[in-house]
Image (cartoon, rainbow, N blue to C red; front, side, top):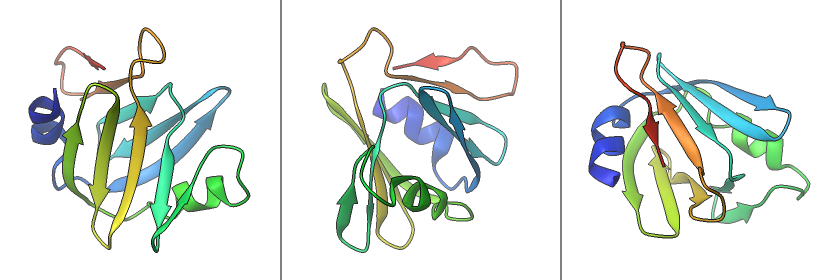
Length: 111
Protein backbone atom coordinates (compact mmCIF):
# COMPACT_ATOMS: atom_id res chain seq x y z
CA UNK A 1 0.00 0.00 0.00
CA UNK A 2 2.75 2.48 0.84
CA UNK A 3 4.23 2.15 -2.68
CA UNK A 4 0.88 2.96 -4.29
CA UNK A 5 0.27 5.94 -1.99
CA UNK A 6 3.88 7.08 -2.29
CA UNK A 7 3.70 7.05 -6.10
CA UNK A 8 0.44 9.00 -5.97
CA UNK A 9 1.52 11.58 -3.37
CA UNK A 10 5.30 12.11 -3.53
CA UNK A 11 6.16 15.70 -4.38
CA UNK A 12 2.57 16.98 -4.19
CA UNK A 13 1.90 19.99 -1.99
CA UNK A 14 -1.01 20.50 0.38
CA UNK A 15 -3.28 23.17 -1.07
CA UNK A 16 -6.08 22.93 1.53
CA UNK A 17 -7.02 21.17 4.76
CA UNK A 18 -10.77 20.61 5.12
CA UNK A 19 -12.42 19.65 8.40
CA UNK A 20 -15.53 17.65 7.55
CA UNK A 21 -17.91 16.70 10.35
CA UNK A 22 -15.94 13.68 11.62
CA UNK A 23 -12.92 13.38 9.31
CA UNK A 24 -10.20 15.46 7.65
CA UNK A 25 -9.41 15.98 3.97
CA UNK A 26 -6.05 17.05 2.59
CA UNK A 27 -6.24 18.52 -0.91
CA UNK A 28 -2.90 17.93 -2.65
CA UNK A 29 -2.52 19.72 -5.98
CA UNK A 30 -5.61 17.85 -7.24
CA UNK A 31 -5.79 14.52 -5.40
CA UNK A 32 -7.82 14.47 -2.20
CA UNK A 33 -6.70 12.38 0.77
CA UNK A 34 -9.56 11.76 3.23
CA UNK A 35 -8.58 10.44 6.67
CA UNK A 36 -11.47 8.85 8.58
CA UNK A 37 -9.14 7.90 11.43
CA UNK A 38 -8.13 11.30 12.77
CA UNK A 39 -4.42 11.91 12.24
CA UNK A 40 -1.87 13.23 14.67
CA UNK A 41 0.53 15.84 13.35
CA UNK A 42 4.15 16.42 14.32
CA UNK A 43 5.42 19.99 14.07
CA UNK A 44 8.80 21.12 15.42
CA UNK A 45 9.22 17.77 17.20
CA UNK A 46 5.89 18.08 19.03
CA UNK A 47 3.11 15.57 18.28
CA UNK A 48 -0.42 16.94 18.52
CA UNK A 49 -3.51 14.70 18.51
CA UNK A 50 -7.16 15.37 17.79
CA UNK A 51 -8.65 17.18 20.78
CA UNK A 52 -5.34 18.75 21.80
CA UNK A 53 -5.12 22.55 21.72
CA UNK A 54 -3.67 23.68 18.40
CA UNK A 55 -4.44 20.45 16.50
CA UNK A 56 -6.37 22.16 13.71
CA UNK A 57 -3.82 24.97 13.45
CA UNK A 58 -1.01 22.40 13.23
CA UNK A 59 -2.78 20.57 10.40
CA UNK A 60 -3.36 23.88 8.59
CA UNK A 61 0.38 24.62 8.88
CA UNK A 62 0.82 21.90 6.23
CA UNK A 63 -0.76 24.13 3.57
CA UNK A 64 1.89 24.90 0.99
CA UNK A 65 4.20 22.11 2.20
CA UNK A 66 5.08 19.20 -0.11
CA UNK A 67 5.07 15.45 0.56
CA UNK A 68 8.58 14.03 0.99
CA UNK A 69 7.75 10.37 1.66
CA UNK A 70 4.99 7.93 2.57
CA UNK A 71 5.38 4.86 4.78
CA UNK A 72 2.78 2.36 5.97
CA UNK A 73 2.67 -0.52 8.40
CA UNK A 74 -0.32 -2.63 9.42
CA UNK A 75 -1.30 -0.05 12.03
CA UNK A 76 -0.02 3.33 10.84
CA UNK A 77 0.23 5.46 7.70
CA UNK A 78 2.96 8.11 8.01
CA UNK A 79 3.21 10.96 5.53
CA UNK A 80 6.37 13.02 5.90
CA UNK A 81 6.52 16.53 4.52
CA UNK A 82 9.35 18.94 3.82
CA UNK A 83 10.53 20.77 6.92
CA UNK A 84 10.39 17.69 9.18
CA UNK A 85 6.58 17.79 9.44
CA UNK A 86 4.50 14.62 9.39
CA UNK A 87 1.04 13.22 9.90
CA UNK A 88 0.29 9.77 11.32
CA UNK A 89 -3.00 8.14 10.41
CA UNK A 90 -3.97 5.12 12.56
CA UNK A 91 -4.95 2.13 10.42
CA UNK A 92 -7.18 -0.80 11.23
CA UNK A 93 -9.35 0.87 13.85
CA UNK A 94 -12.19 1.10 11.34
CA UNK A 95 -13.16 -0.71 8.16
CA UNK A 96 -11.76 2.22 6.19
CA UNK A 97 -9.17 4.53 7.68
CA UNK A 98 -9.12 6.71 4.60
CA UNK A 99 -9.26 7.10 0.85
CA UNK A 100 -7.25 8.78 -1.87
CA UNK A 101 -9.18 10.20 -4.80
CA UNK A 102 -6.63 10.97 -7.51
CA UNK A 103 -9.14 13.00 -9.48
CA UNK A 104 -7.65 11.58 -12.70
CA UNK A 105 -10.46 9.15 -13.47
CA UNK A 106 -8.61 6.38 -11.64
CA UNK A 107 -10.23 4.25 -8.94
CA UNK A 108 -10.01 5.50 -5.37
CA UNK A 109 -7.36 3.94 -3.14
CA UNK A 110 -8.92 2.71 0.10
CA UNK A 111 -6.74 2.14 3.16
